[in-house]
Structure formats: C-alpha cells, structure tokens
Image (cartoon, rainbow, N blue to C red; front, side, top):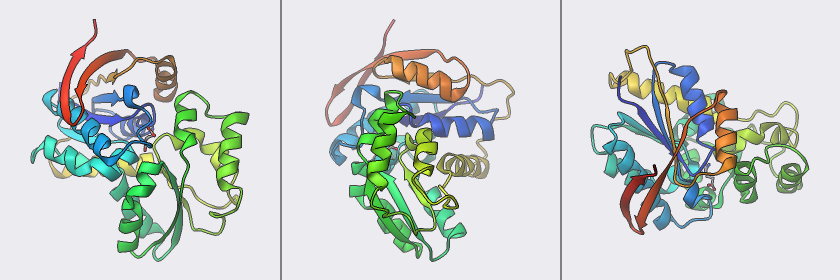
Length: 276
Ligand code: DGL
C-alpha cells in the first residue's frame, strides 16, 4: 500500500476536506486525526495551537504519511510553520488558507469578500493579510459558537439557525462578492448559512478547492498513489458519540474510529499511546 496522506482538525470539520479528497483522489489512503480532546481550537492561544499541531504532525510523519493536510483554519492560520518544521523538507504540508485565497483572486479579481471563522483564525490576521496581498478586500466576523454546535451534531434545526441568524442579522456580508467559510466545520451547516445571504451570493467551496490543491502538489512531487486499494484510518484523541456518528454520516459509510491517548506535556509534542 502506498503511504497515506495525513490530515487533521480539532474534530469532525476536517472530514469535509477528507470527503473532498476521497472524491478527487480515490486511490489515496487517508490517515485522519481529530483532536477532540482539545476541541475547540478556535478559542486557543497561538502557543497552544502550535503545540497541538506539532504533536499531531509528529504522529502523522512518524506513521509514514507522504504529505500533511492541515484541515483546520485555526491551525493553518496559527501553526503552519510549526507543522512544516516537524514534517521536514520531504513531506509537503498543505494548509487551507492559501488555496482559498488564490482561488478567490482568480475568480473575484479586485473583489470584496466576506469571511466567517473562529476567533483564532480571524484574530491571526492571516486571511486579511493574504487577501490584501492578492488585491482583494475582506470583511471578517468571528463566529465562535458555531463550530462547537456543529461538532455536537447541531447542523440544522432551531439552535444553529438562531446562532447563524444572529451572526448575519446586521447584514454586514450582504453586498460582498462571496463568503469564505474559514472553518472546516461550517460547510456542514451550509444550508443555514446560505439562507442568511442574498440568493445569488456564492459561498466558496473550500473543501473542493483544497482537495484540488492537494492533488496538484502530489502530482508535482510525483507522490500520487499508483495502487488500487485504499483504506483510511480515523483516530480521535477523545472518543465521542457525536464524532463517531458525524464521521460515518459525512464519509457516507461506517468508519472504524480508534481512540488514541496523547499524554501531552504542554509545549512539546508529547507521547502517543493507542488504547486497546
Ligand atoms: N474546524 C476548525 C477550523 O477550521 C476548528 C474549529 C474549532 O475547533 O474551533 O478552524
């Protein structure tokens, strides 16, 4: 079997990217880590995000992953360099910010976009800086309640609807050229979010944009799998019913979920043990 692609998020959000990867690259095996013990990432400091992301990157590279996908905007905005450092020169690292910014520049040149994301993502200023560098204007809003509601399985219904409505009620995003969902959990509440926008306003399809970029990087570096069979591994740092149910729902088939224990020493990658 060819080496897997390592991919991680704080929880189920990164599975929106994993799903897009499986669709675009059906020969590839994925090794997914959901850091549910530390979810939500969106309210963590850059120091903590660097420590968590480095620890997971160490696990995935030691497991022989040929590339790493940081399927989390909070980690991509705050800890991409740390992940690259752990991965070393031979394992490409793809974050979720740059592919979306480049896509936005190509499809909305000189445009104005709106963006919702976690506090960690919005406060990092990374999207703001990169969009500006590409000649795009950006309006941002942190929407901290949304990822945890979605992780708990509230993708639709009155609770997340009320949260989404509250975040868009003042119409701040209305006249922009498109909305960036800068949190990988948010596509799971797509219909609720779309309902708050003018009908013709596009929402950027970040999972498929990122999957396309992963395919490009693997192809350029001659890392595409040539085998037929694929198998995926899904690990969480804390087993939760909502992750298990949500993951099977998103991936479209039941998955074997393995809990691993990360005996963390804060500030260093720590040691990992697999539970029996
Ligand atoms: N899905 C993550 C992101 O893209 C993080 C959500 C969270 O854990 O707060 O930022």
